[in-house]
Image (cartoon, rainbow, N blue to C red; front, side, top):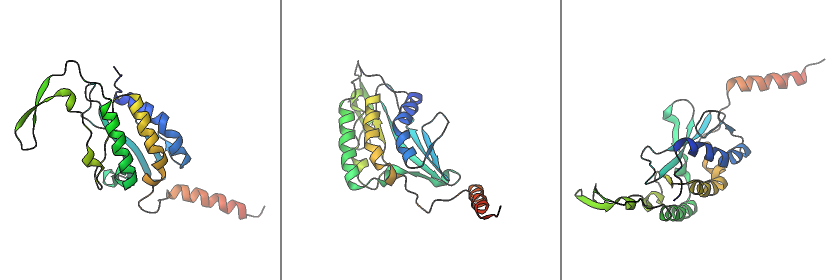
Length: 191
């Protein structure tokens, strides 16, 4: 049986996997407990779903905040292109297929497609969601163990530059701009 990765360990492990890719693109790792990276006025951070447990695993997505406040939050996996989505869909299916079945695996009642109660095995609740890969859709990446996170990091790293591209010209902090201007002015001063 694989060990389920809890939220704290998820953030630690994903930071170790993604930090070098973000740093190559000029992002700085944030010191907070969550896996997050900042560049200029933007912050990328990984969000774990609230409905996660050691039976069904969990899902995560990546958000980017541009500017201040949550109004600027964007789910960057929305930016995956058609080829990315095809690869991601296959990876999701393979990760779901290797999830361990609960023992025991009781039947539980859930709401069916037509609104009526339906009995399903608990282990069947964790399924791939192929519709999420149809653009445009909100994408959440499932995982159970660290090897699943390793697979998602391998999927994400070559796509980071495109996924984290600024939606508008990158804003430069005014204090940083002033500091750079003073340095430049010092170069032209006569001694």
